[in-house]
Length: 229
Image (cartoon, rainbow, N blue to C red; front, side, top):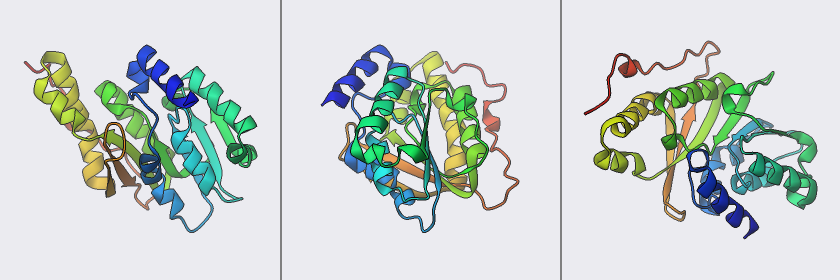
């Protein structure tokens, strides 16, 4: 209940970067972490935008003694809450020595080794298309060859919003599709539908290519496009 109250407060105060009215359900968290749970060897995992830790809890419960976890959270209130969990809650404390918490933007995060799994809770539909393009470039820069990116979107929110939006907002939503769809069509290997969540969501699982010289996917449709009428 404490996490739900804090999440609602942050949604009210910072809708653009919180993007949800409640923490992820256990069903959504299970879908987000499924590729990590199915791994056959130790791994480095990066969670982006963990919020109050609903998905993090599933990650830490699945971590083995050689797994490593990094958490990137911009919101200082959520970051402080996660720090408290790592100090006080038994499940989190068990992996605290193998977990690093970073309060920063994803684009500013740097590490010296790639990740086999990236799990993102960022509210991508709230961001400008250029920001989402930078975020996806960062996802795949940080992923190891063959690594998996898992992120969620609320079902049909973007197409429904685009139907009723006008002017700059419709243009922004169209640009989001142009940024994200090339990654989805080229990289997706699984999608989970999660109806037991508020709102219902689907989880996209995208895979980095096995080659080490991955080039970013360019959304060429964004070039020289003016605002929609």
